[in-house]
Length: 79
Image 1 (cartoon, rainbow, N blue to C red):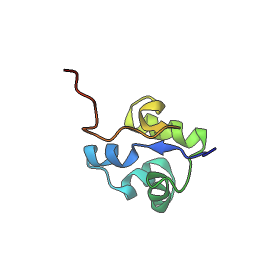
Image 2: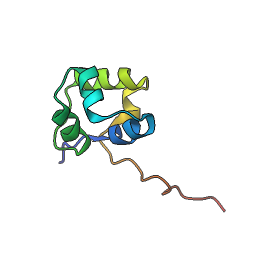
Image 3: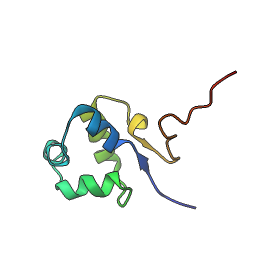
Image 4: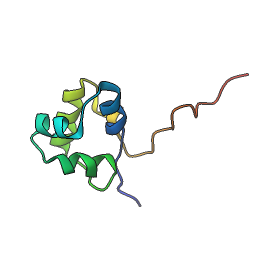
């Protein structure tokens, strides 16, 4: 069983024009930590996940999931 936590951090950062360094400073973590999180090399603590969600002003489940997020444009179209 995989314990990977999938996330949309990079997408949210890009949409809002926020650098890894700026996000890291706002969260009080090293900028490399943001990279590790975005690449799925590190799973955040619950506390950090909630702080990230608060920073982006979205529910935590918008950013993090135990299942892969669908790729943009991969939605099935109804006939």
